[in-house]
Image (cartoon, rainbow, N blue to C red; front, side, top):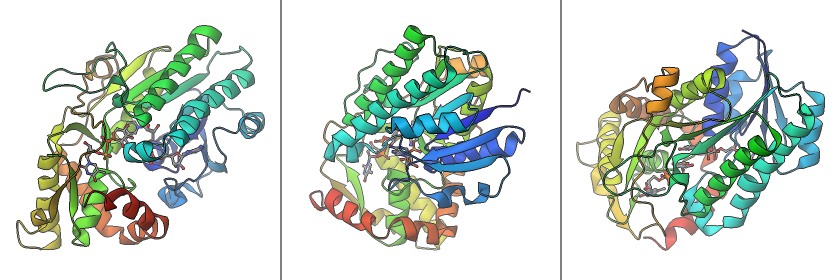
Length: 353
Ligand code: NAD
Ligand code: TDX
């Protein structure tokens, strides 16, 4: 296998840290540069186990800073970019949309332009891999699935900014010939996810016997995938995906939020030795998210048939592993939920209680 120098953006975040862990361990002859601005969502503790590895280094930089990105391309012989850096939380995008446009739209254009300049039309062996979301396709009713041909119909500032970034990636491909690949994945869960997202938020709240804020009637449906399975799919696409193509990745694992909340409650009762049913009493219905997409569901036939990828974990197993990890890593949870997180929680949930 030819050696590679891979720039991973957003590698101190949730999914990026798992992608790096998988690739750094699997490909000793590749070099990895983790580029991250270390926003509230980025945490070097997420990649502490990689710090001393010979094939890994970290650079603090902002993806919207063209000069800084140019310098990184000038220093390292980068031939592959895996672009994950983004603002990723829908509720924050409703409160503060402009930072999503800046990071997700301007940041992606900046990365594309810096790669294009550095590679100077010499695109052999180069790849810009853009990591995106199923939310770009909009919202489904009770039936149907998102395929790679589904029209874009983003409805939140977050999903619109990710859709914008996907369009820019395709524009750099069609206009300048930049070799690109895009994957659009469903909801991820697992260790190191910031506790603003549903699953770690509920685990943390149950731990502290705080209310579990279920938006609306809890009937919205998401397709959940264990984060390590997403990382494996990214590896498969990195090595076997066709340039210019899009691949949808999903768990084939749809849950209504209220049913998912009950699974988390049951698992937590068992793990904490609490009386069965006690965590469910914490469920509290709160006013809905503005513009709340009803259902996401992915048709992952293409990645399965072309690249032989499939999720490896059953959901109950994935949830049990996730709960175990959060309970065993209370210090991590405490460190990310101190300080600014308290203000976030106050602002986000005060009008909902
Ligand atoms: P995250 O919020 O946990 O991590 C984002 C990372 O990007 C953080 O380390 C943060 O510091 C960094 N970052 C933010 N702004 C930056 C900037 N301006 N410059 C450099 N770094 C910056 O996000 P995540 O959940 O790991 O998502 C990673 C990617 O995967 C995103 O592009 C997201 O849209 C996509 N995605 C996420 C999910 C999911 O369920 N979490 C599903 C599908 C796709
Ligand atoms: O407190 C909550 N209560 C609640 O009912 C929170 C935080 C969420 N929810 C609902 C909203 C959604 O229907 O749970 C569902 C999941 O919410 P999030 O964890 O915020 O994820 P979602 O909005 O579906 O988006 C996620 O999946 C796609 C990621 O955050 C995105 O980055 C990814 O692109």
